[in-house]
Amino acid sequence: MGHTGGVRIVVMTAGSRGDVAPYAGLGAGLVRAGHEVTLAAHAVFEPLAAGSGVRFHPLPVDPRAELHSRRGRRLHDARTGAGKLVRLVSMAREAADALTEALVEASGTADVLLVGGALGPLGHAIAERRSLPAVGLPLQPLHPTGEFVAPVLGTRSWGTVGNRLSGRAVTASMQLVFARSVRSLRRHGLAAPDPSRPPRVRTVLHGYSELVVPRPRDWPPGLEVAGYWWPPDTGRLPAELEEFLAAGDPPVFVGLGSATVPDPGRVSREIVTALRTAGVRGVVQRGWAGLSAGSDDILTVGEVPHSLLFPRMAAVVHHAGAGTTGAVLRAGVPTVPVPVQFDAAFWASRLTALGTAPGVLPLRRLTSDALAAAVRRATADDSHRERARVLAGRLAAEDGVAPVLAALDRLAR
Image 1 (cartoon, rainbow, N blue to C red):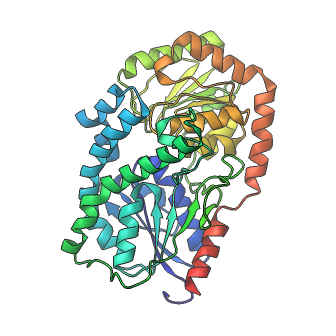
Image 2: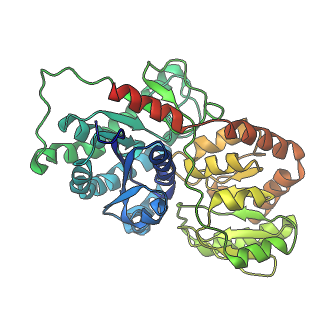
């Protein structure tokens, strides 16, 4: 496979920044191990691969523009996880059709495909038709289990059978998203696989730690938990932010990452009032929601490396996406999860179960009083900080790249 001892790897992913950054970090680790890695992701995320030795293959679709479109805004109208899932499937189908040609093109140079969770069915279909080995790399526990409900459907258990059925429903929804795109692969020059050929054994490695979500006992062999893939530590904090940090006590970070909100102005005002009521300084990140707050004791920032900023915070208030949840745990600071959509409620519930968060504050219940109380509990109760610090130490000892290298080694043999 490949040349000069290395393997030509194409990592494909789609979605928000949190769906791309971990794979940029994984890619950098694979490059250090001597492999040639190309990251296929939305063009807007090309800077994530800069300087790491990872090549970049741009995919169409701007996910931020999609979430701000009329279709994207309708996600907020759905009151249940199932309702959001139905609308997400409809939105994702259009995006999948637009991505297919670029993904087929990206796969043309590969010896192995590493397929991000969001692209599962399409990535594996491309691998099958190119007779390439593939490894699935989801950032969430997507496979059905009786131990918990499918992460995108909330956190309330449906019982062992119901939980497993919820996972199957989500798997079926993902197949539906990509059904049209998979059918179109023949048009892109990829014929259907030979039905007489035995199917490949599928390897799936999950990009989070067993310390955060233990591997379900009812999962079949081949589904493993690798550990976190940390985004590359590149860049530095802006001078203005460094000055602000040096000018007083550690502030509280507030950001909603790639989540969008129906009324950014109202949410921003609630945040400012909450931070002042709690008596803390604040760093507010604009993010895709477009939050804004300005005063002597609160600074508004754009994109900044979480790995550099979070360890210097008194606490982190965030949307509980998979990527940001990992970054907060890595930093070893207390947290206030404000889940907005998709799998955020699942990760928020993990943070409270681990004791690093005092509780969950869903966006729909976010008021200045509720946020001020949560920030006070997160910063005043030393037990949250201590649990976060201990867990961060244990996560630092893990190597999420090693299991991927071992899987590549097995495939090469």
